[in-house]
Image 1: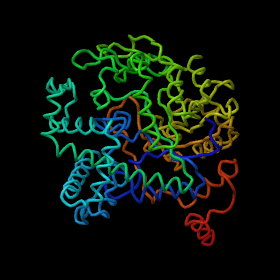
Image 2 (image 1 turned 90 degrees about the horizontal axis):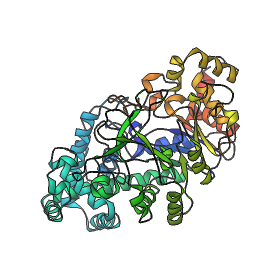
Image 3 (image 1 turned 60 degrees about the horizontal axis):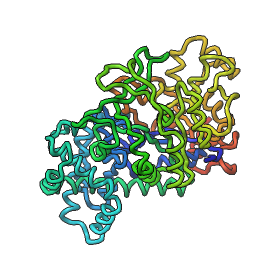
Image 4 (image 1 turned 120 degrees about the vertical axis):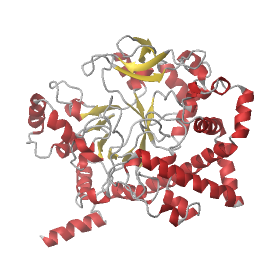
Length: 516
């Protein structure tokens, strides 16, 4: 699907400002959208929105359908009457970092209080809305809520460690669990109802502001998830639900042992028997939340690296053919033409390129990768086609300033010669380069636009701790940022129309000029 010429910013909702330890789907999210609109940015890119578990990674979620309850807006719950002002007073958190331990404990406590009040005091209308949500989403919500309630009962243990009748979904055991855990199940369902409401309000605000939301759809799901527990036949598991093979990538320039991700692998032939119905449902559901999907590890649809589950590294694996065009034919037949970005980074073979191009999907270009070779490097802008998305960097990269500080001198030299600039403001020079390119969409992490070094990095692959913690504070947004972003967007044709930005940011510039 062709995209309009536009630019945008990566900022995951957990990184939004706010007083309660982590970003949430309330007024600060809407203020962020206002900033993007004022800055001439027409896209907001986020990471997966699902409920996170161990490691706090949005790429390892307990469900690919559910929303993250930690993002529920406590301020909206307070305005609705489910929380009291005293529930939110006297709490202090680091504004610039997410400290997940105390933040999760605080938010689960407040969400539980809110759920108790809803159960005892909800109006008939509120209860009817909740019941309608449960009925509309029963195909995934019932399993997810039961999964989370059983997990809570067993101290967070992964489902392969549950008693066998629950692990294996014995009908009598599940029926007994639904009765025994009814309160916990309803609480999980209610949290999903609130997440759905709050995200819908944020998305409506984005739509009214002409800001599209680019979401993220990882090709693989987490092992410890409702997806695998409720659909074991779709994965390569043994009789106890333990994976026999797992996902990863083979050894390459960056890792002598490859990357063993550990995600379970799909039985694609079995999924094809019902027209990839689970995948169709997953994509349809994702498009309720976002306008565009970035499919992470797109190459896995052409071929994926299969690693025996008992191997400690990714060295001893093999390439296995994926579902290929048959998958996209089935999805197109069910859902029509789709707004998909193909994450095609790394070593990409002709079959992957053919699958991407046959479906007219834009691929990704990352400028941090562009200066390690020569003029033929596909990440250099003079080699782009229109139908692609160019990034200064992604959530998995260091910030541009952090990358440049550690890059080999050969790469730094090529960058300076390519730009015909010195390295005074590398991050913004790459943003200008991305904006000027022919790529239909240009995107930068906010940390690059703020000129941050490695202290602003969001994730370091292969490092278990300290990721996903960076947060924006409003004070960190300089007064000149929105006008300067809009200037580049207008200069390079990435925002419809022209004109001054009649906002506090423009006013701040004028006031600063007067003071000079």
